[in-house]
Image (cartoon, rainbow, N blue to C red; front, side):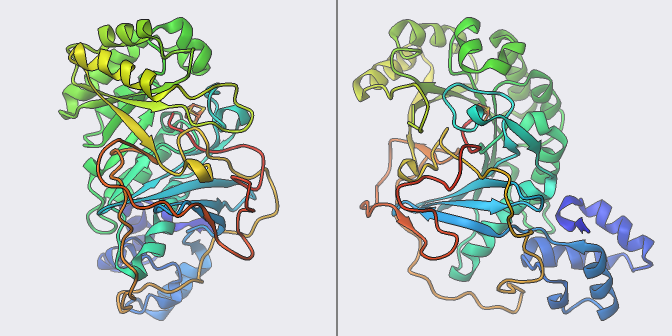
Length: 418
Ligand code: SF4
């Protein structure tokens, strides 16, 4: 059975035209799925019964079931989402003031193999489909909707390297951006890459106004090759050249991500070299102090060292902020996400759930948590804004909860800022 979320609007129209349906049906179905977040064809009451039955026989709407979820008490929630083949990925909801950002994964595992990342240490399993990528957003959108909240931003910074799963990632972004349905502005979407040069160049030509984040993590190719093995295929100069092309094509400033590892890439000479690389570019640097994860042989630098690193960049005229990681306590921050090993997990949710159709009234909620505004990207954010009082991690009780003391039920797979 095909996943309707894998289809573009035009592909859906083509299917319905082949079935002899009038042209307006495609828009009706699209709105049910992408606007009203309905997963059950039988609840799509504006469609004729025959079409509902036919859709139900041929398609599912693959919004995944959460196998487990975990919150940090500050508005960050990590969910382990089941895929149809027994794999699972993690996605993160970050609540911060008026923002509701979803960090999504694009692959199960990751082939890049960054030495400081839980995902990278676990190897690569497979690419996600367009539907599986977008469905992570829809999962949280359905969760937020009863309280009147909406997803405001998406960051493609979870498990995997999105530009190594290019077609599926771009299709998912286009479907989320489509004004007939979910209608999330492209400028509210950030895609993070380790610098896959062909993918960046291709993205520059897509006509999409998304934000691009390039993960450098080192100012020279030798050190970068150690920290981000697969990225050594594309020298830093080539990656910067491709990012410049993207900036010219879109007019968008490029963000550069730099995970600070104590004693490895956080020295003053690294800061000076990074400043030399980025001076004069339409660029912003996000400095990310390392988030520890089990089995990773690195230390987080001191606040003083982090600040000194940032000052060197700023003094050289390079805009830089220190990103405050969100969800560290629950293993939801950059480099910490983990998934499940292959296991028997339930199939994607379809035809069940709360039935969030257009007639449904949103319920009351305690309102959004007031927290720090994080960055435009990921479960991490710069040091600014107000912070909600920390109440500590919470685990959803009962079946499907992450056990206290564990960041996830299984060995790694997981998320990181690529
Ligand atoms: S940091 Fe990103 S690109 Fe690197 S291994 Fe982890 S998920 Fe992959």
